[in-house]
Length: 381
Image 1 (cartoon, rainbow, N blue to C red):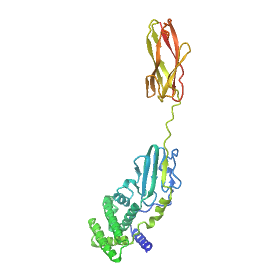
Image 2: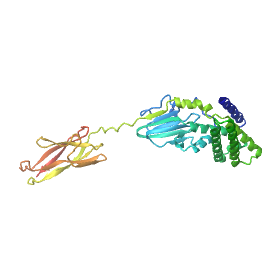
Image 3: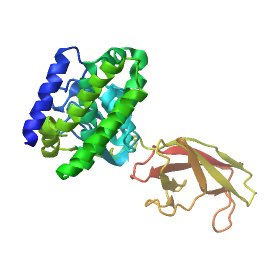
Image 4: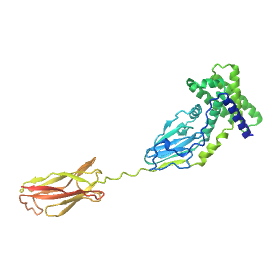
C-alpha cells in the first residue's frame, strides 16, 4: 500500500506542476560522475578522484572540489590537513535547500544538490568523504514536494517574486515540520490514533498557512490546505530518491590527497665569500680570530678544513652536523663562522719570519657538499 500511496502523490505533484508549479527539478542521475576536470585545473600528483566516486570531483595540489549532482543532500566529512570548506557555486540552490539547511544544526557538513564546494588542503595528507544523510534527504524531499504543491496555487505567484523568497522559506520550513510531526504521530498508529493525528495535521496546516496568508481569501486558503494535507497523507519520504541514496551508499565515497614531499635541499654547495687577511707583527705572540663569511641557501654548514702553509690539514666543526664546535650563524642563506685563530708564533713558541703565509679553507654542509677552496694570508711583518 505504501508504494501505491507514493505513486498517487507523484501523480498529484505532476498534475499540480502541469498547472504552473515551481518545484525543484531533480538533477539528472545520468550526469558524468567521478573525475570532473571542468571543476578545477586537475592535477593528480597528490592523488586522484576514484572512477566510481558517487559525485563529481576534481583535485589539484591545493585542494579538492566536489559537485553534488545527485537529487539528495549528502554529508561531507573531512580528516587530516583539510581546511574549512568554501561554497564556490550555487550557494543558495532552492527554497528546499534553504529549508533543509535551516532545520539542521550541522548545515556546514551538508552539500545540497547542485552545490560545488572547495576543500583546501595543507602540506600534509587529507581526505574528504561523502555519505548519505537520510534525515536531511527526508527534509529536502518533503520541502521540495510542498513547494510543488504550493506552486500550483496562488501562493506560487507570490513565491515567484524574489522579494517573497524569505517568506517562502519560512512557510515551507513550518509546513515541513508539520508533515514530519504528522508522520511521527501516524506511523504504526491504530485507526483511532490516526484519526487524532489527522485532526492535529489539519489544525497545524491551517495555522501555518493562516500565519503566512497573502489575503487570498477563504476558498484559496482551503484549497491549498487540502493539497498539503493530501500530500502529507500520501507521502513516502525516500520513495523516488532511493536510486540516488543507493548510488551514494554503493559508490566510492573518499578522495585522499597525499602529503607534499619534503622540500628538496638546494643543489648548490656552500660558497665562501670572504676571509680577511690577518696582519700581525712578527714579534706579537698573540692569537687572532679568523672569520669566514659564506653563502649557503640551506644554512646547514657543519664544518670544514683549514690547510696551513706547511700543507697540514686541520678539521673544524663536525661532518655529522651534530656538534659543530665553532661559533657562527646563518640567516636567509648568509652565514659566518670562526674556524680557529691565526698567530705569528709557532706551537713551540718560536716567532715567525716577516712573511706572508698562505692559508686555505673549505667548508662543508650536512650533505657533504664542499665549497671551493678560499685562500687568505697571515701576514707577519
